Length: 238
Ligand SMILES: CC(C)(COP(=O)(O)OP(=O)(O)OC[C@H]1O[C@@H](n2cnc3c(N)ncnc32)[C@H](O)[C@@H]1OP(=O)(O)O)[C@@H](O)C(=O)NCCC(=O)NCCS
Image (cartoon, rainbow, N blue to C red; front, side, top):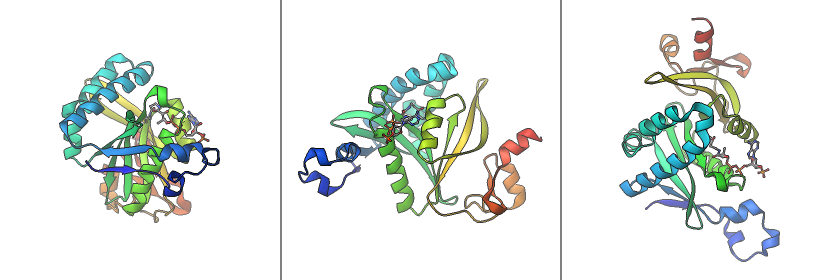
């Protein structure tokens, strides 16, 4: 089973513990296991149900939580996403699943979308989220991507504050109809990996103007690197 163990080997060779930063010490014991098998998928389904029910019921209501779990975080939903290029990783610490992350690489746009990033409530605030983000950033650099992006519910204030602290910028609104009368009313956030998109570059998509207008998520870099969210502009000025 392919997996990645983070950590600095020097820190693993018996430095006195008082000299080791807490996060670095913890990182030596964090393992990212890429999800392939049915058993692993079932494990994520259980984790998602626990975390989403606990976290999102107050934000979007139980009905929408159940609908979204069934659509996106069921065995069937995850298997379809894996077939569609999603990568899921569970995060293991001392044998416990502390959370999971799912990413969607877009080679053309040179960006990695963080589709899911979840830490169990009892394990939050201990550096696991940061380690997961650093894992995604490492993947970004290794694959020569220029940015990370994600969408977050507008009322998920705790996560929005956390993303801002982690260096993400809010670049606009995204409203997606997910069926049965439910919508995802989100902000889109981005974090550059240090390389600036060129003028008129839709994060690497380089679509002709007409096609750009057709894409709800087309983000266009303008002169002075001001970011224009096409979706938001069309919503304001239909
Ligand atoms: C958001 C989440 C992934 C962060 O993971 P975490 O393990 O709790 O975060 P970390 O402990 O790695 O936090 C890293 C730093 O951010 C700080 N931090 C934690 N929560 C914060 C918040 N809400 N706002 C600002 N800073 C925050 C920590 O104190 C820590 O600071 P330090 O490195 O200086 O000590 C996690 O809280 C979570 O799963 N939340 C619920 C689900 C969710 O909303 N996921 C996002 C879906 S879009």
